[in-house]
Image (cartoon, rainbow, N blue to C red; front, side, top):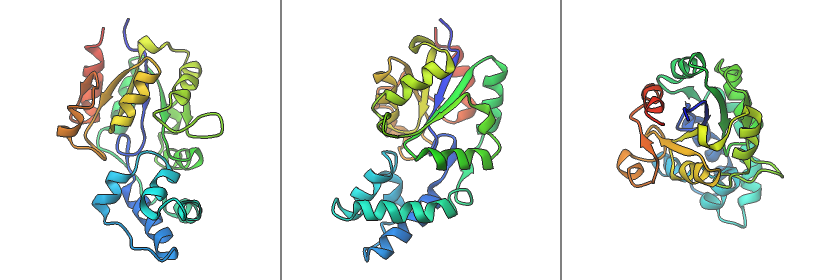
Length: 215
């Protein structure tokens, strides 16, 4: 069965959004009277949602207020602080031309994901965009993936999830899909080699030929 649907992670996979995340986290931490983590540390901390990020950065007692402050600032800097990763637009166009249905599953709040994708001119490439809500816990819970499969009209066996973290592999496995990882975000190539994915690519431009090898 050939691959006919691809579910992309957002941060570290399609976009480099760390500048906006750092800005918003610095805003929150400063107003909480706490030190701002260094950029390399923030890169390691992201990927599990805003609440998880603030628990790790500010502690459980201040996490809720920190998340509120983060969102307040992030809506102002998300677009400016996010850029498409090299090869993203071209790869999406090629996959769509090959007949693949595309979607996005991110632990970023859905309104922010939509805002960034629309500003970067690629929102129309996707049949659906998903984020955590009351019915869909953050990845690696596969609830978002199940909803996306329905929206794309695709089965798990013909779908691949693409991401830059081990959570993306667990997400794919939970929904019965295959996983491809790319070391363009929070995790190194060395780390991802042990993440249990079906394939690792060097960049998004390598994704179409990698998918062609799945049977």
